[in-house]
Image 1 (cartoon, helix red, strand yellow):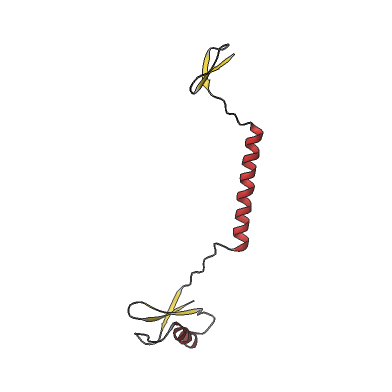
Image 2: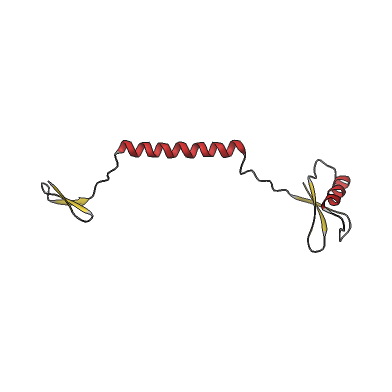
Length: 105
Protein backbone atom coordinates (compact mmCIF):
# COMPACT_ATOMS: atom_id res chain seq x y z
CA UNK A 1 0.00 0.00 0.00
CA UNK A 2 1.33 3.48 -0.92
CA UNK A 3 0.50 6.68 1.01
CA UNK A 4 1.20 10.11 -0.49
CA UNK A 5 2.70 12.93 1.55
CA UNK A 6 3.76 16.46 0.49
CA UNK A 7 6.56 15.64 -1.98
CA UNK A 8 7.22 12.02 -1.14
CA UNK A 9 5.44 8.74 -1.14
CA UNK A 10 5.95 5.98 1.39
CA UNK A 11 5.71 2.37 0.37
CA UNK A 12 4.44 0.55 3.48
CA UNK A 13 5.84 -2.77 2.27
CA UNK A 14 9.39 -1.45 1.86
CA UNK A 15 9.17 1.25 4.57
CA UNK A 16 11.30 3.61 2.43
CA UNK A 17 10.47 7.15 1.30
CA UNK A 18 11.14 8.19 -2.28
CA UNK A 19 10.34 10.93 -4.77
CA UNK A 20 6.93 11.12 -6.39
CA UNK A 21 6.78 9.31 -9.72
CA UNK A 22 6.14 11.26 -12.95
CA UNK A 23 2.64 10.92 -14.36
CA UNK A 24 3.84 11.13 -17.98
CA UNK A 25 4.34 7.80 -19.70
CA UNK A 26 7.55 7.18 -21.67
CA UNK A 27 5.66 6.82 -24.95
CA UNK A 28 3.91 10.18 -24.44
CA UNK A 29 7.21 11.87 -23.64
CA UNK A 30 8.80 10.38 -26.76
CA UNK A 31 5.90 11.68 -28.88
CA UNK A 32 6.30 15.17 -27.39
CA UNK A 33 10.05 15.19 -28.04
CA UNK A 34 9.53 13.96 -31.61
CA UNK A 35 6.90 16.65 -32.25
CA UNK A 36 9.20 19.38 -30.98
CA UNK A 37 12.13 18.04 -33.01
CA UNK A 38 10.08 17.92 -36.21
CA UNK A 39 8.72 21.43 -35.60
CA UNK A 40 12.22 22.85 -35.07
CA UNK A 41 13.51 21.03 -38.16
CA UNK A 42 10.68 22.43 -40.31
CA UNK A 43 11.30 25.95 -38.98
CA UNK A 44 15.03 25.73 -39.78
CA UNK A 45 14.27 24.46 -43.30
CA UNK A 46 11.76 27.28 -43.83
CA UNK A 47 14.25 29.94 -42.75
CA UNK A 48 17.04 28.44 -44.85
CA UNK A 49 14.93 28.05 -47.99
CA UNK A 50 13.34 31.51 -47.90
CA UNK A 51 16.52 33.29 -46.79
CA UNK A 52 14.55 35.27 -44.20
CA UNK A 53 17.64 35.93 -42.11
CA UNK A 54 19.89 36.83 -45.05
CA UNK A 55 21.71 40.07 -44.35
CA UNK A 56 21.14 42.96 -46.71
CA UNK A 57 24.13 44.89 -45.38
CA UNK A 58 26.29 46.73 -47.90
CA UNK A 59 29.94 47.62 -47.55
CA UNK A 60 31.27 51.15 -47.81
CA UNK A 61 33.69 51.31 -50.76
CA UNK A 62 34.43 54.85 -51.95
CA UNK A 63 33.65 58.53 -51.60
CA UNK A 64 32.56 60.58 -54.56
CA UNK A 65 32.18 64.26 -55.38
CA UNK A 66 32.97 67.43 -53.48
CA UNK A 67 32.66 67.93 -49.73
CA UNK A 68 30.02 68.96 -48.80
CA UNK A 69 28.01 67.07 -51.43
CA UNK A 70 25.03 69.28 -52.21
CA UNK A 71 23.06 66.78 -54.34
CA UNK A 72 20.53 64.10 -53.44
CA UNK A 73 21.06 60.36 -52.93
CA UNK A 74 20.20 59.82 -56.62
CA UNK A 75 22.89 62.33 -57.62
CA UNK A 76 25.35 60.58 -55.32
CA UNK A 77 24.56 57.19 -56.87
CA UNK A 78 25.04 58.62 -60.38
CA UNK A 79 28.41 60.07 -59.31
CA UNK A 80 29.46 56.65 -57.94
CA UNK A 81 28.34 54.83 -61.09
CA UNK A 82 30.20 57.15 -63.45
CA UNK A 83 33.38 57.23 -61.37
CA UNK A 84 33.67 53.57 -60.23
CA UNK A 85 31.28 51.60 -62.45
CA UNK A 86 27.96 49.94 -61.84
CA UNK A 87 28.89 46.31 -61.00
CA UNK A 88 30.94 47.06 -57.89
CA UNK A 89 28.78 50.00 -56.75
CA UNK A 90 25.19 49.17 -55.78
CA UNK A 91 24.10 52.38 -54.06
CA UNK A 92 25.13 55.90 -53.18
CA UNK A 93 24.04 57.78 -50.06
CA UNK A 94 24.67 61.32 -48.84
CA UNK A 95 25.42 60.99 -45.12
CA UNK A 96 27.33 62.43 -42.22
CA UNK A 97 27.38 65.90 -40.69
CA UNK A 98 29.66 67.13 -43.47
CA UNK A 99 27.41 65.67 -46.21
CA UNK A 100 29.78 63.17 -47.86
CA UNK A 101 28.68 61.08 -50.85
CA UNK A 102 29.38 57.47 -49.84
CA UNK A 103 29.41 54.68 -52.42
CA UNK A 104 28.45 51.17 -51.25
CA UNK A 105 29.45 47.91 -52.93
